Amino acid sequence: MGAGDPEGDAGEVVPAAWGDRRARLAERLARRNLDAWLLVPGPDLTYLTGLQAEPSERVLVAAWSRDGAAWAVVPQFEAPRVRSALGPDVHVVGYRDETGPEPAMARAFAPFASRAAAFGATFGAMRLLERTAVEGAVPRARWHPIDADCAALRQLKEPAELQQIRRAALIAGRAVAAGLRAAVPGATERDVEAACNAVLLAHRTSSPFPVAVASGPRAADPHAGTSQRRLRAGEPCWIDLGARCGGYCADVTRTCVVPGLEPDPEVAAALAAVRAAHAAALAAVRPGATAEAVDAAARESIAAAGLGAYFPHRTGHGLGLAIHEAPFLVDGNAEPLQVGMVFTVEPGVYLPGRGGVRLEDDVAVTSGGPEVLTDGA
Image (tube, rainbow, N blue to C red; front, side, top):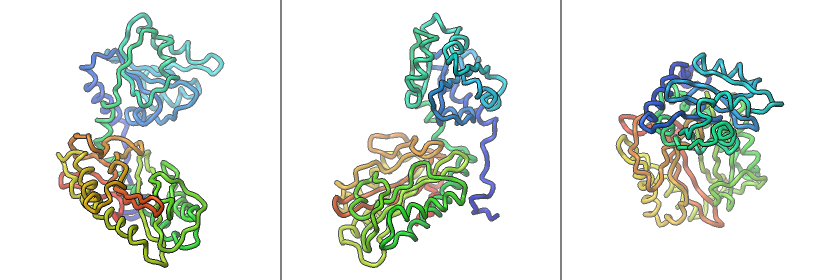
């Protein structure tokens, strides 16, 4: 297979990397005076341990204390898989459905039972289910967010991670291209969606979110879902989809004018404005530039075209194990861009009653500026 084939060698995250990541997180948290930090199912757990687990009705909590101890409370039938993923240094305590997690939690968290223990957790992922289970064993638990600490690590992609995103972006580009070919007069939005999904399925992947196709006036809703509406010549139609490879996400949006007629002049102006804003945003991407500066470049370009009131969302969001993660390209985010960050650049203009336009590419920050991972068409 060729080097550009998405089925070729894409690189894998090796097990040693998970230990290194946990060590870096522990170093960040050392000055926080936490007794332990906890992980629950979600991207942070996967990033730091390699364990892939989705939230369910069953409690799964992994913890690392500042004195080096590590343990996990998990459903008994999951225990072998969790032990294999977390390694011999993590003590796995299983529980059966008929007993529930309470006895296992009490055993695992016994050293903290009578203390006002300080626990770090990702507030964006931990549910009341997990928090209540911990507090049943540690009634005086005090909670501290570690979301920003995890995000700071995850937003700087390692080479193996970046290669997986490149692979996903290549597949996503092929899928959206198939959708654009299917966007002809008389086709339904569902027909276009099906053309996209066929390509994703052929590459043994799927979009991390439902493929969205919006045409005509419906395209004025930035988060419109796909409908049975039939496409008409000359109207705008955008397709928003992603792909996932090795757990890592890509996200791409393309807007076309359905062939057969010239577009409405206002739609044509919106297309030109969005393309110019996209180029301006890319030109602003470089190490040391702030996330908000990229957003401002896109926003000022669209405002100069007299369409600023019709650009209602941020210019982009980070990509990785989650489809939306740090960094966020939005006004007020003064974080400097760093080599290894990956995010979308997706300015849009949405005209009520007429339609909308969005152009979204996936971009990596390199020492020389932006690397566009999608096809950039």
